[in-house]
Length: 314
Image 1 (cartoon, rainbow, N blue to C red):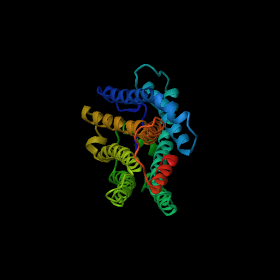
Image 2 (cartoon, helix red, strand yellow):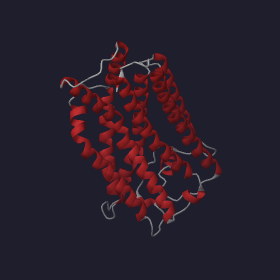
Image 3 (spheres, one colour):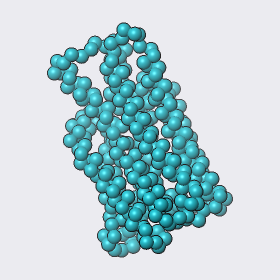
Image 4 (cartoon, helix red, strand yellow):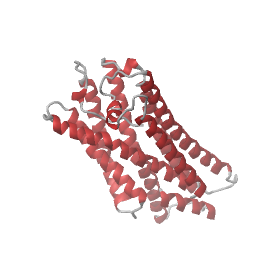
């Protein structure tokens, strides 16, 4: 579960608040740099290709991330936004952005697994039902409590940039929320690893169907990378349940929050879009090599079906 940035002016007064702002500006700049770095690939592999649901989702995530990062920079550069009204409006927009991005990233994962499992209807129903169930439970836990937490307070509490005094019940709900999110990510990773292992174990020793296997390897590598970023973010978020971090305004606590901000933005707006871009890039190279007449190994009919299924869905 990514964190939600907030206006640094809402922090408790301390001489070290610039530390977190430096992390925010650096991480947001990294997102913008990655977009500029991959724009050529994006133009060729996304904009000029046949449009699909995944194309729309890629563009949405990538181009929500750009104003998100710019807004983050403006909010954390001293003297840029001089009016509280403008700062509050921008902060509210940034806060709600996460509720749009997070489901999109999970749709990426569901679609990839659906393709890897050969468009199995049972697998699709299982994935959608599991994700929706976990999302509902997380929403109920986050918005309900002994004292009844309003959505505004829920958003504010999850900014992690203010110093909060939380009770044991709120700490427990925080742990439950991120634990359930972690269960979903672990489940998707295990399903991806299982189908890859099953695929390679099913190949005969003399099989030359390497192309579809390479597709699976590209999928699993990007999936593992995304999970690694999520795991770091989840661990740091769970650490916020500790009063030593959540109730502290020390330099160490702000560095902690800054690292969390960095990892989270990279997960959402760099590694997330690459879940699609990487497989599109591999497919383009494969087509280019085939058209150039390079030595391509012959693959069986089943391999070609797997290949078309993955490339068309992802």
